[in-house]
Image 1 (cartoon, rainbow, N blue to C red):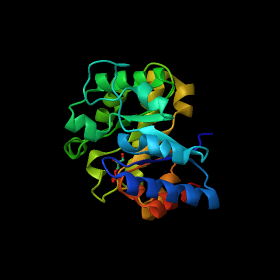
Image 2 (cartoon, protein in one colour):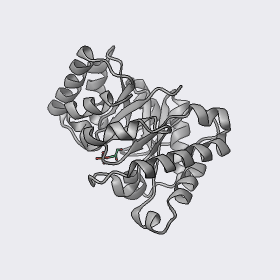
Image 3 (cartoon, rainbow, N blue to C red):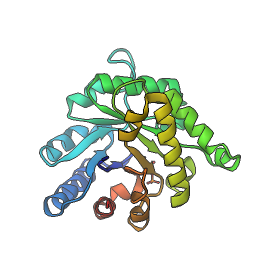
Image 4 (cartoon, rainbow, N blue to C red):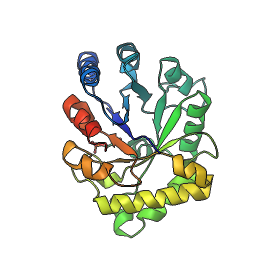
Amino acid sequence: MRRKLIAGNWKMNGLLAEGTALAEALVNLQASNSVNCDLLIAPPATLISPLATLLSGSGIALGGQDCHCEPKGAHTGDISAAMLADLGCRFVIVGHSERRNDHAESNTVIRQKARAAQAAGMTPVICVGESLEEREAGQAEACVADQIRGSLPDDGEAVLAYEPVWAIGTGRSATPEDVARMHEAIRKVTGEVRGADYAARCRILYGGSVKPANAGELLQLLDVDGALVGGASLVAEDFWAIAQACP
Ligand SMILES: O=C(CO)COP(=O)(O)O
């Protein structure tokens, strides 16, 4: 049985005061309500240290939004997986479409980052997803399969996140039918790459305009093991309502 994971990707949002207030609000919500899922927040790197203190003992896990594939060295501006783990991160998002696009990250680099995360004792959350052009050309499943074959490490734990690029930050979520079909396809490819046992336990999250209004129907789909939430994770009540939608 795969326990659902609701993850908030804060992206490049949150100065110290608002970031800590948001985390405090989540800790308070968690103290007074139980949810049927694991919880993770991935704040900007500048907030990891203060949030590590704030979230300590809360049961809300902390994650990075990216890491470098090398353990250390001359990489100005980058952060190693060990640095994230050192501050208490248990997860790190790799291969988000915004990194694939803004920083021209390839599947090969993303796999190296995922391996670096595993080597530091963290679980990578590996993002995949097709562009609108790829979907309109009927290439969505082939594109996502290529991304999985290229970026999923050969061993070790990983979480996968299906985030169709056209659904991110647009308010336009994929339909439950599209999500169900794609998640089934992702589990099948994962089985081909890593074997049936691994595919059966691998968590596959959906991301792209998840909000309280659509979380319930997405999270009850058979192969949807949680959500990677952008915009709605910046509002404590909305993020909490999404977590509460886990059946
Ligand atoms: O990119 C996302 C999460 O990683 C999704 O962002 P939105 O929820 O804002 O569409």
